[in-house]
Length: 73
Image (cartoon, rainbow, N blue to C red; front, side, top):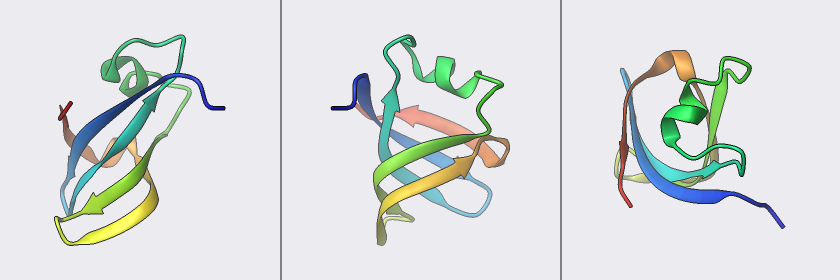
């Protein structure tokens, strides 16, 4: 079983908007902890809606392409 806290977020890039679930690992408390972790280049989202029309079970987003992140929960 995966441990951690699942948070619903909206991620905007220059080309698309993604709404999905981000897993915050047990040793982290906030979305910013995940985003500021320099050892990880991508964030992984599950149960993702892309541009309000398309659906994907999983998307890996390069953190350098992210313009904004909003927590929805």
